[in-house]
Length: 96
Image (cartoon, rainbow, N blue to C red; front, side, top):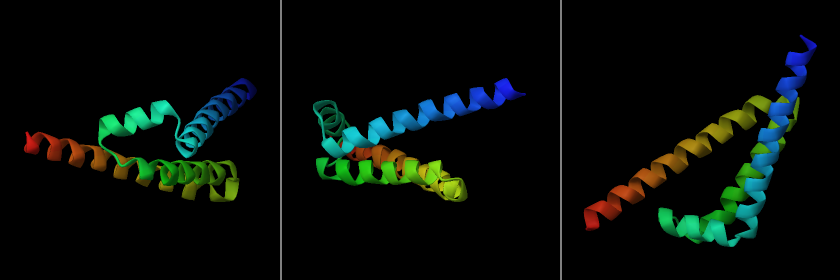
């Protein structure tokens, strides 16, 4: 049982580290982020707010008392992003 708990902690830490990395690169607006936003059709001005939201969600996920709120906010953020990509792609295909 102890091994399973430790494995869960390691996997959680890896996911959180990746999310911190992703949030920071959005805030810094490095070249790959700029290219990805251009390809997806997102305005580059949305990169920093998305990064900040992701970092706030990570902070909420780390604190046990706010873990559920962080998970819900992260899920809502992902749904909004997915709908935005779908809308942008449908607008682009309608314009052709």
